[in-house]
Amino acid sequence: MKIISDPQKLNRLSRSISKKGRSIGLVPTMGALHEGHLRLVREAKKKCDAVIVSIFVNPIQFGPNEDFKKYPRPAAADKKLLAKEKVDILFNPSVRQMYPEDPKTFVLVEDLGDYLCGRSRPGHFKGVTTVVAKLFNIAMPHKAFFGAKDFQQQAIIRQMVKDLNMPVKIVTVPTVREADGLAISSRNKYLSKEEREQAPILYFSLKMGAQIIRSGEKNAAKVISQIKKLILSDSNFKIDYVSISDPKTFREYQKINKPALISVAAYIGKTRLIDNILVR
Ligand code: AMP
Image 1 (cartoon, rainbow, N blue to C red):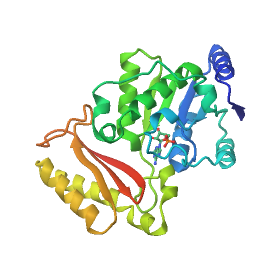
Image 2 (cartoon, rainbow, N blue to C red):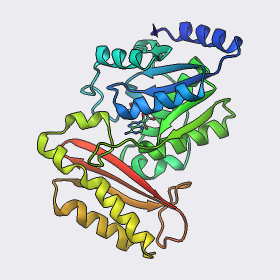
Image 3 (cartoon, protein in one colour):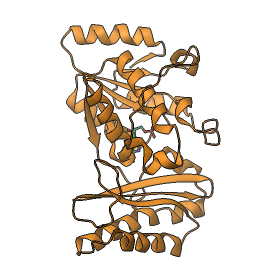
Image 4 (cartoon, rainbow, N blue to C red):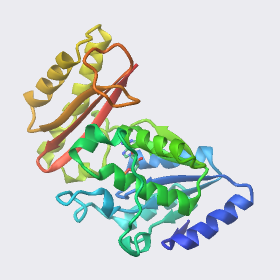
């Protein structure tokens, strides 16, 4: 596995790979790699000739009171995991290398970023789309792989790619979960033993919500209230939002007549966890 931190060097290498007629898959991550990330890597290996994994904790997608500083950065363990997966290139630039000076140009996908996590994390998606656009320009992938766990993120990236005619295909990979249902996340490392025991209630509550909808309930407010009740019944979670929305526009339903995205964000202690489920 080649390890490259210089964006120009990666760009040169990517061009030479493409010139040889080999397809490139990019898996953008912030590191602290886990089984969820590795599923993306394996998908990329299946679909592309050469796989680049980027590890970059992107400062411009964190709010001032968020966990940028304490975000886990287990560099050696990450390298080992990627080498084991036979990843071709690890791209791990420093903040300086990605942002040599304060950027003045940003990519903003309007509207879609105003809902759900965008409402609670102003500027977050602008930071994400900007860094992903930069990574696409640097790595020039044919395909890029994102997780359904961050459903809104992959939808916003798809919109960016469409609107800006970016020559890359977005592949969305289903959420990988722990045996007890908890969506795997780098932030799960923050949880105390007790918090970790309570955390699966998020996914249980989403599954219950989906079940209620499937059994014919159309009133979104009623379903949301049941989900909230279940989460709060037996945990220390503080709910940020529970939403039932159109999976394409993220506009909230009052009446559920079409495919619905049930999504939740909640704090347990200082840790913010998100999860979602799609009801077709
Ligand atoms: P992150 O390092 O958290 O920014 O995540 C990098 C990529 O991995 C994003 O596309 C995430 O959606 C994806 N990802 C994170 N956790 C999971 C998971 N449990 N299952 C599937 N994909 C995931």
